[in-house]
Image (cartoon, rainbow, N blue to C red; front, side, top):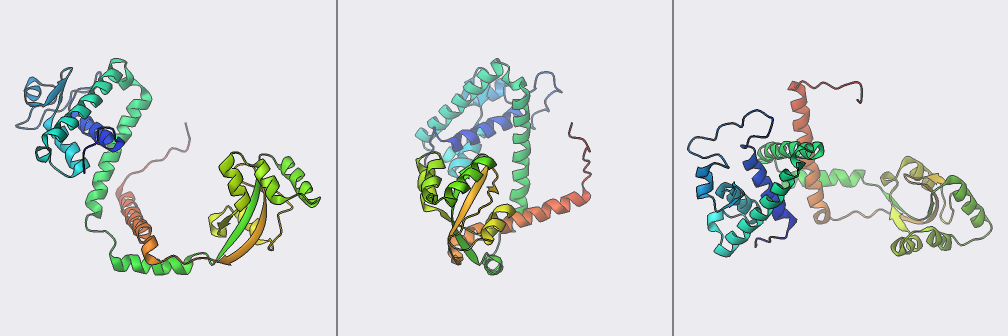
Length: 294
């Protein structure tokens, strides 16, 4: 794996590294920054700058930051990189520091949305640290995933419905279209006419397979009441707009092979374990919720 200076992943990791280093800097108007750890120099001090591979307007690009990005992106320590990789990585962090300095020079670090984003970014890093430690020995076993698969198959929808839909913005216009259909208008032709964009027109012509469990109650109820070839004579309210649905055919729902869904099911099991941790933390935490939204 090579270091790519144009990838978002590298940029994000580098930003995170510099943000960690910035935690030791003293923000304007706030409490003094904590002292540096024993045996180390705080970023921005002459000692830190002296041993840094690069310094941007007095801000050192530290070996610690470089090592963090290297380990995060390529799984190697900074010292294990080739000279060319080191140069590219330093150039990338210099680029980020230059752009960050420009934002500070324009006062962007005082912008309330940016301050909030930085604060939430800090919380996210700390949250990920907790999850990494907690899940270290709690990854789902093959037996757990297999058992969950068997349960999931039993509870999976048994029927799929092939439908076509005409979607419009208002109920009165949808009722006008129902009148068109009653007079013999072609359902697919109207669906294509009302669709926006070539891809949507193509999809309107082909229709799609759905399960009732994946739909809103209004849509599910409307479809379940149809016989093959029928359409809804009363327009159905959609999340956005109104629709007339025609049922084309039904079939038994496909039961996917274990290997096709294993990764997704394993992730669901991990999510359940995280939810269990949060529930336990809630028992001992003091959580106060305001009764007002202001």
